Image (tube, rainbow, N blue to C red; front, side, top):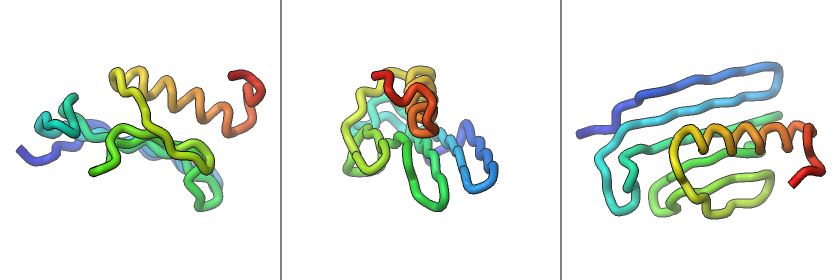
Length: 97
């Protein structure tokens, strides 16, 4: 089975881009949930936040200049976590952790 794109949305406002792509793929050791995803926030041509499970890196999170492992639960939690990061990056709730 080849990767099947099951969801894609891209919003562009000014110099901001928010894009979510989710593919259905065969389950494997590195992709045990049977999905591949890329969720990204770009402003001024620079990635400021996002989540993905790229080959060889596993599930991970990009937040400003940091990359760290991400504990994937499900797509709904992924989107919730991304929205929270997006609010923090954009300046809302910046002091809340």
